Length: 131
Image (cartoon, rainbow, N blue to C red; front, side, top):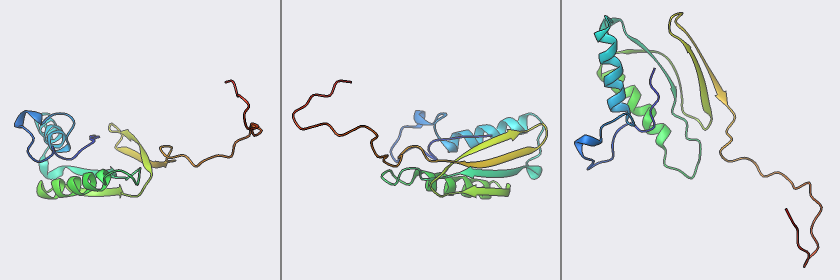
């Protein structure tokens, strides 16, 4: 299971900048570790979850990550058996590798909560409110 924040380093980044922050590094690491422990690449299967764009004011990082993951797996000839990608809601993934079980649920977006009406009485002009 991988969870990465960015697909690849920005253009012009130094070679030493490839680390645990980038999907391109983490995907290679995961696959190589699985192969080192006896997995057969021809039998690998993948599930993809995430790729949401949680805040409309930010770059579409979720979309880029989802596109990267799909392209990476296609280039490695690893079959995607299930995908739940995109949208504006985060996901919670429960993974039980020993049983081969996975559950994906969407999570309420709490990054930009809806404004709530104030329950306090209005303060008269010129008054000081202590808190």
